[in-house]
Length: 505
Ligand code: HEM
Image (cartoon, rainbow, N blue to C red; front, side, top):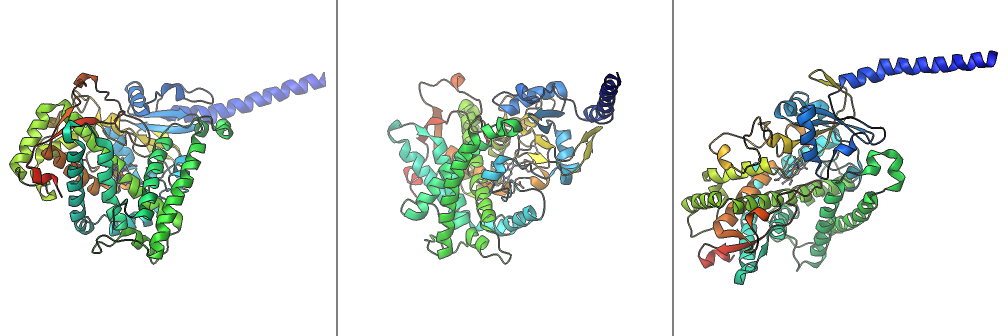
């Protein structure tokens, strides 16, 4: 009798304790967080996401609002989907939202979270940003590489002319990637990766192959990371894949650094100081992980993003021949037909600038920016956002917000033509480069490459789709990884439109 009484009493106490914690802790926690879709045990709200997460999140935000709670597996996320909320997170509370989560992406692609893009907000990140801002991205240094950029543009034109000879089709992605890679290699290493330079040529080749594969792999939703009980099984094989790629990336970058340490490299243009030597000779020595991290930040950040942006823009122009014609008329007026485009022409090409802004709105190649992390409990509107919450700014949804952009799916440069709309983070309706402390540090270089690259190819060639492909058949979906290129690489017809000597360097 006494035993039964004791066990009933024990159960009652347990129920009371649970009820107390439920009322005291869970109910207020749930009540004070932003609205979001139902959340199931273990998987959270994962079922609500499709293969293209930024599009599913935009859809969910229509129902739950511009600041939304989403539990993915066991990780708390806040999704921000309009300009006002982006301003709260990236401006008003910028400092509290400026860290990065410690995910596998940062371990493998960010060299144990020591690169700029993956390191937490703090002294290490500040030091690396300062080195890049003062030694790589100053206006003076960008100007000093102008000749190199001009050379790369000329090589691209020559290359396209050769590839298209005899009416052959041209695959644009490798050509645009080569343009941006050669350019960033000149800035970092003082030379372009050349086949003739066997050692570095092969290492760069291997590095770029492995790193672009890595970017695709780390951008995928990894169930074994979101649901810790699945971690040992690595169900999608993503971590195994990352480990394999990491070994190749480490090997190729260590070989490159070894060559520079030995001083055993060919400097094509000795007037250009090179960034890797600056990194190796800083007063306050950086460890190799950080050096490789920064180099990867620049090599990856500086290449595929700009190349994919140009590929999207070219496709939109082919689909809108009237807009392409108007851009070419502007180029012919400003540049004429007897020389290639110079960077000094860019300020005189307002219609081209409008095309590029509209393309950034419609096709931001980093659609969810890079995940942010809150470093302390914060309040936005009446919602409490606890420390260590992952925050995704849905740049894609912001650029497609129908309250701001009428007919948001339409490509219409006139909507921004003549307006003082800035893409560098001060206009929260258009945030292709993010904003605030974590804003993209390569913004100026990216703008130069995209503007000059697109102007150059539009001026030098007439563009069309392959004869058997109809405009309406084009797949306008994006591929999803850490960056979002066009799902199928663009293969087109290019017809020279300038005197023959312009196509030779
Ligand atoms: C069209 C070209 C580019 C686009 C659209 C782009 C976009 C972005 C975005 C959206 C972010 C994340 C911002 C955030 O977290 O809120 C970012 C970060 C970053 N980007 Fe870019 N980017 C481009 C070109 C470049 C270039 C040329 C470089 C360097 C050469 C670069 C290096 C970086 C780095 C290092 C970060 C991490 C910054 C940090 O975590 O503090 N990007 N970029």
